Image (cartoon, rainbow, N blue to C red; front, side, top):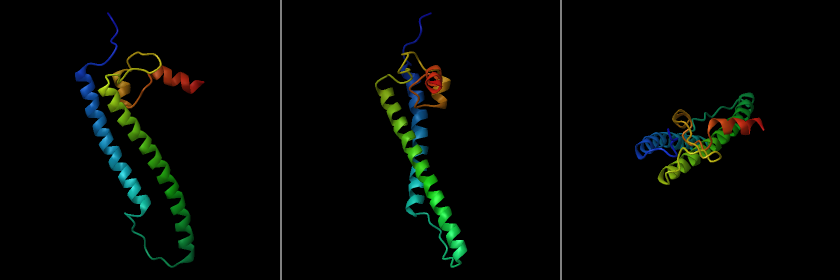
Length: 127
């Protein structure tokens, strides 16, 4: 039996729907993170105790660093999902960029923006 070279239009449409759902959630999350970073969701209290203030400021710095890191990861994920939608349009979605073989559906459902099959990904990690 000949090995499939690409996913069918129906399969690509299934992936498009999955990616659009994940993209909507990621964009919503990104907006919430950015709102929190900008203070749009701030519920600050006017606490005057110096010890509390110092602890709060230290905590805020740590929280902002975490939020920036989360915002960067989320933005990278959004970019990956949008690139996956472009690959769907070009009918190159789901094809490993190193081997040229189809990435299994299970992997694409778990990591819809994947461009490498799991074997290549694991080999790249080990080198």
